[in-house]
Length: 120
Image 1: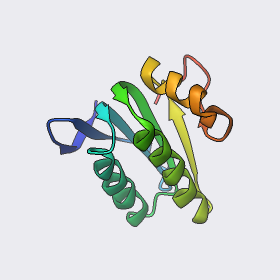
Image 2: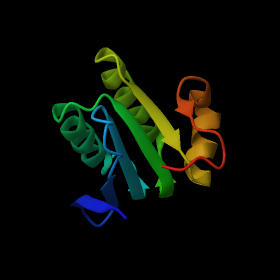
Image 3: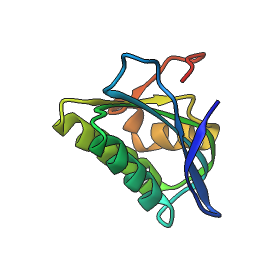
Image 4: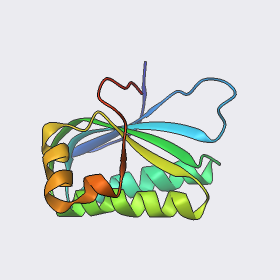
């Protein structure tokens, strides 16, 4: 079960519930195109998560249909912002476009990607 937090025609960011007793964990899913026009939605959602006190973010990318360099490097920026709060970012189920882009840019070495089969 998920709860939508923001929707537009290019990308949808969904906030997923976390287990009780996990006040610093947040789960978001990105669905659609993650590019220069839509990364502000991810940044806004991440800022809201951080403002609520969450420092650890699991980001499900299985629904991303297209991802450009702006999207990829925004993930790096999100990780940096969370680390500045002693938090972490874990990418879960990156779609083929995300996975291919991360490898091509060498970002798979700098970002934490959950092992295949991991769930939110």
